Amino acid sequence: DGGITQSPKYLFRKEGQNVTLSCEQNLNHDAMYWYRQDPGQGLRLIYYSQIVNDFQKGDIAEGYSVSREKKESFPLTVTSAQKNPTAFYLCASRRREVHTGELFFGEGSRLTVL
Amino acid sequence: DQQVKQNSPSLSVQEGRISILNCDYTNSMFDYFLWYKKYPAEGPTFLISISSIKDKNEDGRFTVFLNKSAKHLSLHIVPSQPGDSAVYFCAASAATGGFKTIFGAGTRLFVKA
Image 1 (cartoon, helix red, strand yellow):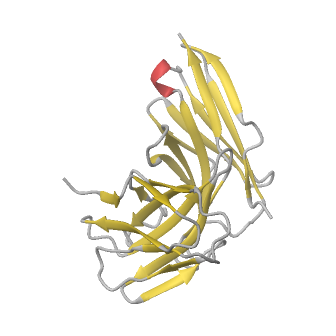
Image 2 (cartoon, chains in turn brown, red):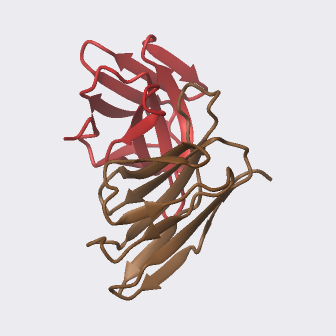
Image 3 (tube, helix red, strand yellow):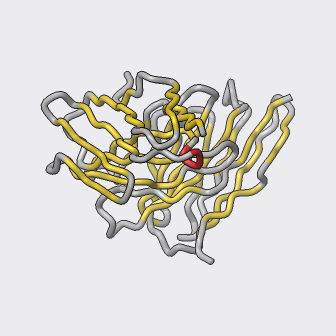
């Protein structure tokens, strides 16, 4: 079955630690995205990548970093510089040929900072 | 600066009746508007979309209406079913800049049996 796999589903981190959230897709999609959801708020864009070895900052990129070395993978690192990292993180992908901009989402990763 | 706004945090509807979810936007450059449905602890799933050059798109029980002059769109669900209870996100995307998609804050729909 094609889809997007995010891991881990739940993650706990101590303050000052970097953590990396994994996102893998086997949909052969070119574009991939990372969003963050906080309670009562919509999804806010952190980073996105349209092709391998290229990515752009979204609206809230500070304290995060990404890489796109393979088409299938778009890992997100939450660094110690991110002041409020506790949130639900969603990875998504999109077929470049589909011009509606429809996104396919993973199940999400919930990060809690202790 | 919220480019996409959903002003109603929640909506309660009786089963069988119509649910109307509203969304306003500020940027005239959006090419497509989309609605996503989300259950707790899951990723959103795509529901229906509409091009900025159209004013209506229908898919089964779901219809999206777009009023460009008012920068307003709405999602109609008829008839509403208990399984429709979820959070609905309005989103807008622009082809320029790699379809950077902006989401509203969401509206939680409760459909009562």
